[in-house]
Image (tube, rainbow over all chains, first blue to last red; front, top):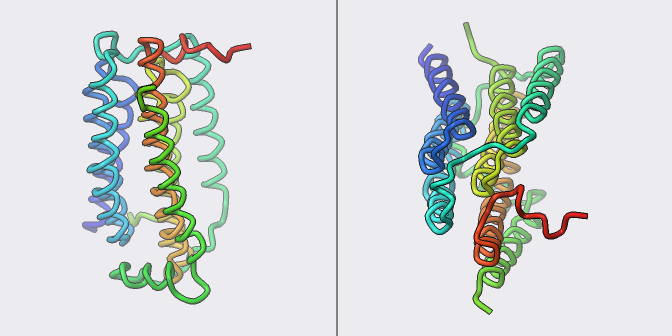
Length: 162
Length: 103
């Protein structure tokens, strides 16, 4: 019963915060609502018994990416102009609603092969075995730091003064 | 009333649609990046929900979610670097006024 209540509270908080991100005119308040949305998603991960992912979500999104975004808002003087919409506001709204309806129809009309097994907890050691063990994901694990290194070098090269 | 896979998927779709609207309709490039982050988070919720309800012992969805987070971090760093570079050369990050490569 507690899980259901937690899910509904977190879902409502997350959706309201995400709506505030796209509807508020103040860019800085939108960034603060984005942090709230990230925290709600971390709570959703806890209700799905993904404890490691919830911790990583708080560390990476709430800790690092939100700082980057707030830095981006402060270094560009667009705050005074606010977060306005372009001339495609109505078509974008229609596209989003059509996508929402189509995918909700697909989700509710599909028979999902749900397994009744209780989930694995804690997941940290199991995830480590999946990532580094035999028949796991060792090649993607080795590609990921190359991608991060390329992203860091690319970011430095792009923002460097000529 | 017990919550199941479909509740999580519907939550994920709602968040993705909000992010899609923001990415299509906003002028400020930083707000567009924020909307893209919301969309990536929505996909992560769907991945972890599939992992929890369909393959509870394999954790494949959680592994995919970790790689999505890696790509999202790289995307945020490079995206904001591009925003800074555009702001330095053109004094604006209004996505409708960045038309250098427009045909």
